[in-house]
Amino acid sequence: MKIHAKSPSERPRSVSKHLKESALQRAVLAARTAEDNRGTDVVVLDMRELTSLFDFFVIASGTSRRQLHAISEEIDRVLEQELHDRRLGIEGYEESRWILLDYGDVVVHLFEPETRAYYALEDLWGQARPIPWNNSAE
Image (cartoon, rainbow, N blue to C red; front, top):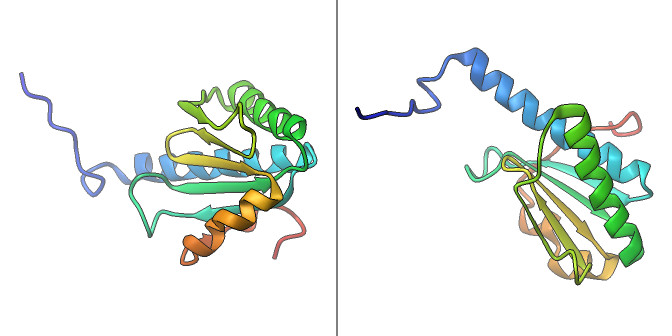
C-alpha cells in the first residue's frame, strides 16, 4: 500500500492554520523565556515567505557561557513543560558562542554579542518580517 502525503494546499485549512499558530506560539514562548532569563536583543523573525525549511527564527544574545547555557536549558524546559515540545537537535553548546536549538519549524539562535554581530543573521535574512512578540514591541 502506497501512502501519499498531501501537499500543503491539499491539507484542511484548520490543520495548516493550527500548525502555523503552534509554531508561532512556540517561537513567542521561546523569546519570552530568553528575555525572562536575561537574554538581550530578542527578535522573532517570520521565515515562512523565504524558506520551507522552518517557519520562525528566535534570536537572542547572552553575556556569558553560563547565561547562554541557562537560557538554552530553560527554553527546552519551558517548551517541553508547557507545550509538550521536544528539541530535535542542538549545536554549539560546548563552545557556547552560538547555540542553535532546533525545534523543527522553530530554530532558536543564542549568541555571544560579538558572534551575533559577526554572523549578522538579521542582515542575512533581512527580508524576514520581524514579529512583535512582547508588550513593548510595536
